[in-house]
Image 1 (tube, rainbow, N blue to C red):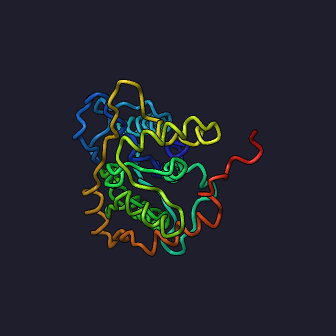
Image 2 (cartoon, rainbow, N blue to C red; image 1 turned 90 degrees about the horizontal axis):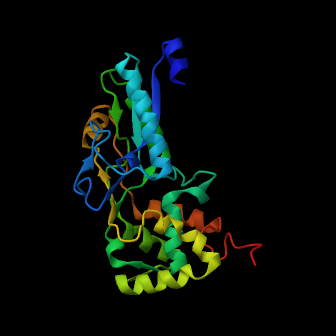
Length: 258
């Protein structure tokens, strides 16, 4: 694709992910670091194959930039349903954020600490508009973080699900570990819990490194763009649609299993 754009003399825009921030393992790199638009590799762990693939793609794009090619990189965030009508991606069952929520639902519990974790919902229609606007910025502006700068707590999503009858009980860490271990002994549930254990390794402290996007948000403001606040109405519409599709059904995905 880079070669095609080079021959056609057109701008190349890569849709990457803020997940290239990677992980901190046992404090390396520092857990307090935050990926901004000027950072690329700073020692972060990139064992996750998806994040690593995006990282390697970014490297190819940045190398092309050093050769004078006109390129941009858009590190998007937690892509979610359209703000306009709640419509979501056709392959919603593979969405990482929703898979985590379903895993908590199968466990039946979530630790209080996780309830207070920040997350963001980047409606896909707003994300597409933001990418288009940023794609037209001056060539010297290479890397952007077009994701919603209005954070919510994971607990807000859990509360919105409860209103739809999808109950995930907040509890102390020890109780959560007991219920998680119990769910792992159920072969039907265990394979759906990967979203909660993907970054766990025995004896290691593994923490996701966060990212910031204040620079990108300032650019978007100057282009007349503002991200929508993630309201309870938005969450309700989104989770109603997911529930209607049977995503949170405890038996979903178990059909045909012994």
